[in-house]
Image 1 (cartoon, one colour):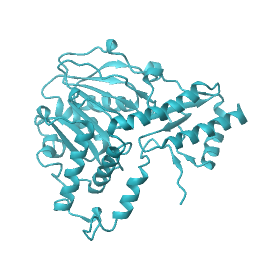
Image 2 (cartoon, one colour; image 1 turned 180 degrees about the vertical axis):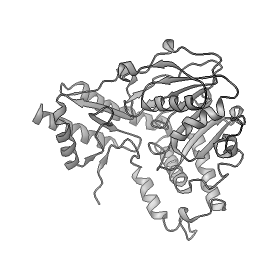
Image 3 (cartoon, helix red, strand yellow; image 1 turned 135 degrees about the vertical axis):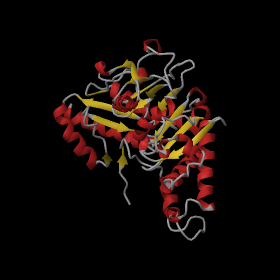
Image 4 (tube, one colour; image 1 turned 180 degrees about the horizontal axis):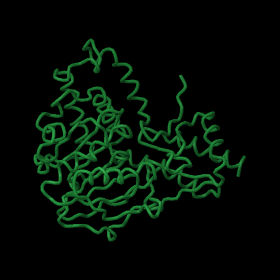
Amino acid sequence: MSRVINFSAGPAGLPIEVLEQVRDELLDWHGAGMGVMEMSHRGKQFGAILETAEADLRELMGIPSNYRVLFLQGGATLQFAMVPINLMRGRQSADYLVTGSWSKKALGEARRLAGARIVADTEAEAFTRAPEQHELALDPNAAYLHYCSNETIYGVEFPYVPETGDVPLVADMSSHILSRPVDVSRYGLIYAGAQKNIGPVGVTVVIVREDLLGEPFPGMPLMLDYATYANNDSMYNTPPTFPIYVAGLVFQWLKRQGGLAGIERRNIEKSSLLYDYIDGSAFYSNPVRREDRSRMNVPFTLARPELDARFIEEAGRAGIEQIKGHKSVGGMRASIYNPMPLEGVRALVDFMADFERRNG
């Protein structure tokens, strides 16, 4: 079997060890005589899977006891609506940082439901940096401040956690959660779609402080109320059992890598290798301010855009896939999430160097 070097921005690659364990347990999980996809979510077997997954995530992230961990469906995009529905709590407005496509979409959804104001917007700079703390025009009476801590499309990652005083901080961490240690206590709510660093498509993780539960907009469906899931251990309805199971295996894999401190060291090594090559080349460039560059998503352009199609075609022949940039920005993008080995990044750099020698 020959596997490609997969730089997909999501759904993304999974650790080989995890895929092999899923394969081995697909028909018979731990002697149950059936696979996880076939189990009742109310049974003891899946209950143990869910309990272990939450415990391992809590250990990895150091989640305090006054936070609830919810396993939901609908992707991070549904959270664009669930956050204002649950966290406005009688306030007139919420604050939003706009640093790329995903935070812009979150703002738009919030404005359909409630008052939302922009406290910083870098679109005029083509989303090439994160705003600094002193630039944030914060409202001390806001219901919360929302930001996307890593913008997948533009490759912008916040190098700091915004200070908000008593205003709850909400973060969309979909594309870099579990890639580095994080102080959960600084946030009111964290959410993340699974398909980058957590597991397969189908589950969304929400980490929410308990005092923010229980006051959604009046008349909202129960399925849009975080308390519904918190009060039912994420099993008000049938949860996405198989993605939760795979996510749990990823959490265990991360623990074997030395936890988030260990995986951060690997991520720094991988991203530094790629950025150093780009910065030392006159043929490739990255537009993001250096201190705000993402360790997970590295966009880059070629000096001659007419070579883009050739680059993608030849990369594919070399076993390098999903390297094309997002349609809204063009160029290339290498997403180097946790499972991407250093050898995969080296192979990309070697290909880039060879392509530059032949076309530069």
